[in-house]
Length: 167
Image 1 (cartoon, one colour):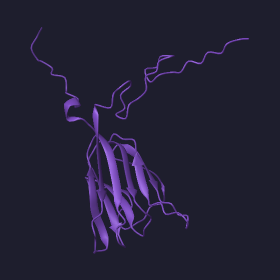
Image 2 (spheres, helix red, strand yellow):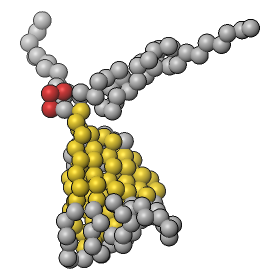
Image 3 (spheres, helix red, strand yellow):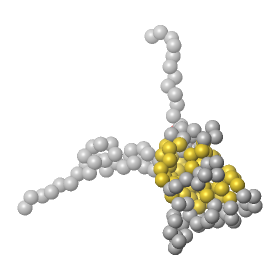
Image 4 (cartoon, one colour):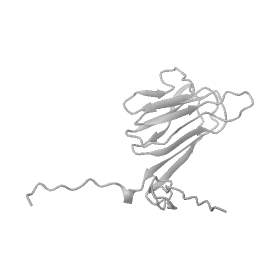
């Protein structure tokens, strides 16, 4: 009987390699080159309108902003320069993909009556500018969970130090 040998392709593009991407996007990495930033926005709001939840810094990856439970509130995303990416200027966007901050965001708003899932947006990143996340407040805040990865302080990329002296 013939023997079938299956070799997997590792993230290093070698057949038979067992290397995989770590959560920081490093092939064969040990998750030490990035750190998780996460939080829960639970503030009690009273005024209808846009309320800032969190600032997502430049360089953020694996971005996830999720309303804990479905509500009549909406999530919104805006660039620091003031450009609306999702749900800006009192206009509610349809669920879908939206480009902003150098990455593609997937905006989800479950519409099934039986669903209790809140709306969310996700992006792989990295972002190339600071982005601000808002809640368009209309009813008591059920809580919004946010998380993203940032490069670790000790592993930030250094620019090459070029000398102008002749060799």
